[in-house]
Length: 298
Image (cartoon, rainbow, N blue to C red; front, side, top):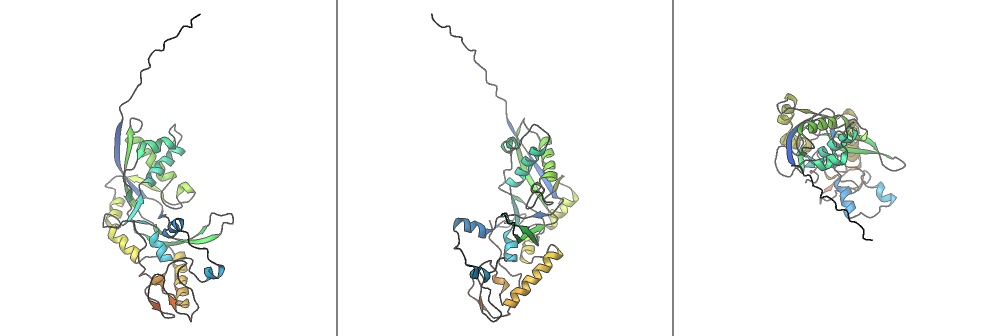
């Protein structure tokens, strides 16, 4: 007996008209911003690992170079512009997506990452960087303590252009998520999202007095000067840096040549060859410790 075939009715595909919305958000920091660019030395070792050093070799090399590490911690603009310091555009986008994950709504983080974008590869970061040296714990099982030097901005601001897909999102929802990101996630190193107290911000209007003051006084020239002649962010850093400079002087090392694990640390009677420099400095000779060449730029 022949089997009857049931014909299926054609299903109409419903397609909605999508539009792209955009807005400029103005962020003003409420807690310090710590620059967290990956060290150039670490990236170079990923590309071309350095040979393993013996215990004796490690004992005669500098482990840290505070001034070089300070200048290496922010993303830097090569040519003149509104700011010398930059932040990857992915950072505010991920903060907004992270806020969605923690909001009591039906929107999830993956959807926000797909629907929201920050077109700029880097966003301008306003604020005067200061040198901060903090005790951190390494990620290993032993949690070995170490000193990390970064650029810290106590008063900072950042304009961000955000785009989204309508009608799933609108400007009100984006502003709400961005405001929540400033409260729950933050930006930079040791931020709120990672359990730290830093990187918190709030949204303001373009004519906000604090925003205008930061943008007028902490732009490219002020940042360039702060990188060339850094100031310590707090008394603890100042005390540790003073000891570091005294120790370099005692060992006859020129701070102008500081590069971690490249400077030979001899005793006071040795002549020291600077890393990547043809000059020879006599014992005890110390030049301006702040005249260190800027770290690599983007």
